[in-house]
Image (cartoon, rainbow, N blue to C red; front, side, top):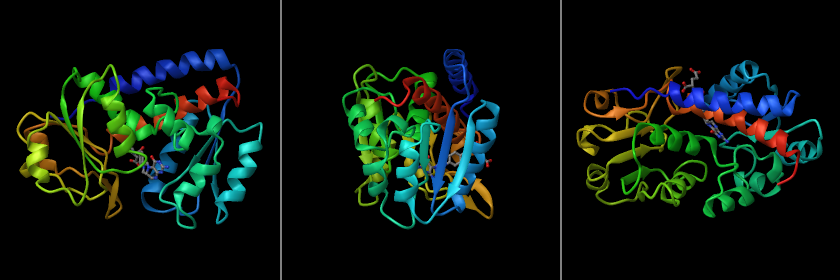
Length: 269
Ligand SMILES: Nc1nc(=O)c2c([nH]1)NC[C@@H]1CN(c3ccc(C(=O)N[C@@H](CCC(=O)O)C(=O)O)cc3)C=[N+]21
């Protein structure tokens, strides 16, 4: 079964509408990349479309000098949110995270916002991680569920695991990585499996028991088409989010909501 994410998007749209009424002006998002290809290109194109839909001023900046570009927009009073695409080609992403203004960090990648998530404060958390959480909250009661997160990235696996463990959600989470032994045993023993490894069609029914909720975070560009990390057959036995039209489509809506949030906060953390 395919999980329908439209109700999640509707909720975020409602939040955005309330923010817009409060703000009374157009907020502005700048998306910066030093490698405008593949999944980044797919995301930035999506952002452009959705920014228009939500009436957010939007600009894509392609640059070889990320640090100088970020420093410039950190100070620019006309810019409410700054997004920097991963993976970065010219420098390590942590150098970006270290200098980005946390008040404009609409993706929650700075140590400040990452740290706030550890404290259970989810003001700016990585949008893809929040998207997966919001979809799960809609599909089921999370309390005491066994969750396997495949992938330990700084913008998906790690923050997502923290959010699911936080008080109120109370999941028990395993974070799995490429060196994990008996991965299929762990995933087969989980109620929820979240796949965020970036390998097209990697997870099949060898990993899952029937009836598992599967969240496919993968965005792989295969022959010019978006393909998830979960193989199509899984849909017959499990509830699974589609790609496209699943996690990714919620991610962009959350990013826009965060731009409104940043604008309303007016540069203060
Ligand atoms: N700092 C950073 N954060 C990211 O979250 C990030 C990133 N860098 N780099 C690139 C990947 C890729 N990614 C996508 C998210 C949504 C769609 C998306 O909107 N997909 C739509 C369809 C788009 C289409 O059909 O072209 C969907 O899945 O329904 C695509 C790709 C986020 N990423």
